[in-house]
Image (tube, rainbow, N blue to C red):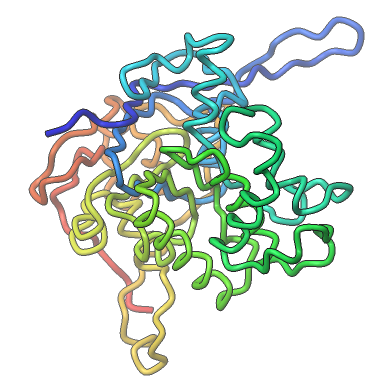
Length: 334
């Protein structure tokens, strides 16, 4: 098999917490990402899901070098991303782009759409000489389903879905190989979400893109992703193919998330099985010992507090970090 285009190993990002008025001192650390490992293959979409605060967006920021990692490594096409500087780092920026979550704040309101989409060409002039940039921008707007005649308009003159298409066009400008999608449809209406998801799928086929698709909605992830990684409190709880995760989940947290996915048919809603989690998400400054999910898990036993479960291959053929991953969940009818 070909080497993965992106390989992340034991990635850690801790944020220091300081207190004091004149002389601030460190009193703790927020363990936002705490030992995450995964691979991304060429042309593949890896979904990263989990509830708010689990470290998904921090993972995206570290992969884009918007935040520097505390430790760990990320290898992109054989190069250590975190050791690149100068021209090498600039070349990496061309090959990896990001689509941000909020289309209302990710675009400069004082710039026209043509300037926003064409801005990458100012940094990488070798991609498009000055004389051809306007034509390139028009082509990009057409590719994402916007009128090329609107390049002189401002972001406030577009709807939320159209603004996100502008962000997608900007990410495509340099013809990257990997795009980090940081919850790109969470701020959009459901009908617009489907349109943007279909657009991302079409663009992937047309340009051979690889996606890291971050979301908190498992139903959205299933529409696009080849593999899914479920995160909880800075760690990956389970990772596998789309069929493995959705049809044979082995981690209690994954089972709970799937049980909360809305059922379209109202006649089935009263007959489905629902897992009700108790307690709140622990603080990332002081996560539980052993398994981080044990304080909310109905399977938890003494070993869960004493030993951190390894991310190991389970019966379904995918990886799961749970001492009792093979056991079926105890569910409550909802």
